[in-house]
Amino acid sequence: MDGSVLVTGASRGLGAHIARRLAADGWPVAVNYLPDRADAERVVADIEAAGGRAAAFRADVTDEAEVTALVTAVESRLGPVAVLVPNATGPQPAIDAVDVTWQDHLDQLIFFVKSPTLLMRAIAPGMRERGGGRIIQIGSDLFERAAPGMSAYSAAKGAQFSLTRTWARELGPWGITVNVVAPGWIPVERHAGIDPEHVEDYRREVPLGRMGTPGEIADVVAFLASDGARFITGERITVNGGHAMD
Image (tube, rainbow, N blue to C red; front, side, top):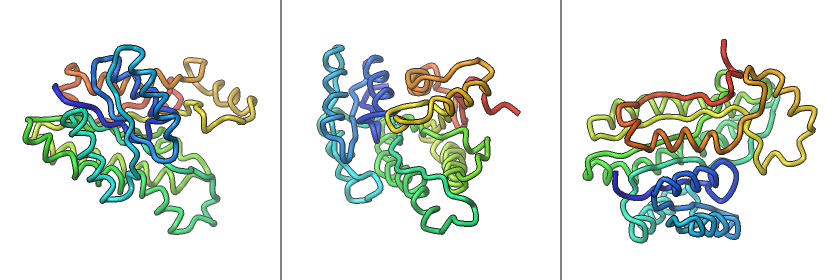
């Protein structure tokens, strides 16, 4: 496929690794950020130093007007978006079930239902005109693990997967594939300061005997963006070393 890639929330964490990996495959990459311009510019610099092409774009991807402007800016500078990776997220606090409010649910749905919907609506018509594209959502294995304290987050991730399956059916006739990559716990910058014993407790539950890396998530996203995944849609690929197996 020709065109560019848009990765939201790509200034750090999984998004930064995904952006670098897709750029290594030759894609021009739009590195979306909101508060972290310096971090986004570092990701762009890394990509350019490796011989790739990228640019940073500031936008709140939960705001409809900003999403529209973002897509226009990306396509003007890097070319039509052929691969969309809605990765942006917000705080994910642990809250006991009896204390969860509707606002707590909305805080998660904004990132995992509203934002992907706005992005899909802005990009899918162009993909249709060009004969296809890829939408690759970033999910979580918490949807399977039903971790206590994470009901709002898990519910939103469940809704995200439902969106993915429905979109796969609706957008498939346009040549657009829609899938979810669902990582296990992959420590990134947001986990700085976590008790090492907590990490070790998790590691002991992983059949492969180690923690996963951001690069391993990025590799799966890169596969789904590739021509090799052209007949895969509506799927949820869990990448957690077997941690959530029944």
